Image 1 (cartoon, rainbow, N blue to C red):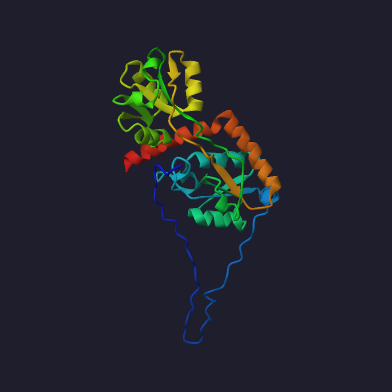
Image 2 (cartoon, rainbow, N blue to C red):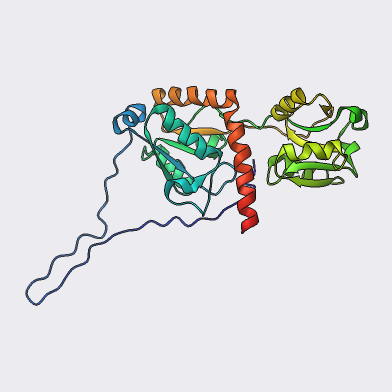
Length: 287
């Protein structure tokens, strides 16, 4: 999974240092400059319930999973599919949400040291990170990638090579757009805002195909009996997106996995990520 739209953010950490004050009679001794501030560690699901707060860290430079909307302020400026998931987690656990933005590696460290409860940052479960944190079950999987075509034209497209010289539509900034550019170099890519925008283009033959996730293709074909998936799809192996928590927190892991199963099984996360793609594309056009 590559980072499609990077919104660079400066995360400023303000250090407040007391200075000595001199007067004609007295001089206050300055406080030690290297004095360490004690960090209160989080305590898994029990701590979340006791403090009535879920602390989630993220690295908001990875659209559509997490990024910043500069038109918003405070906690609401953190947007993207993972941030919607964080808000949903807090709602289900019936606690307040606190989002802490930091760098990717800092986020892993904060989770490992129990300074936060959960890390959500478009994370793939790499083996080399498993010594630092524990992974949840995947909550998002791009799945197989297919090309939607008109059913009456299905025989025209027996394989990917048959799209040479044809127009294939894909949503702006998505994995599907990336795969079309990489795997169909002799095709013309038409950028669309939503998949729905591409359906009239198929029917009017302004586009010959639309690159979509297989999950979306199944739903669209069920609702539109004049469409079908081309026999050969785009090559892609999904590794799944997971959250991370500190080790030895079985109760928290189970609670998160139960909610993750709900959002992925119901299609909620697919809706969030589609909205996030559209918002990221809109913000990209404004820059």
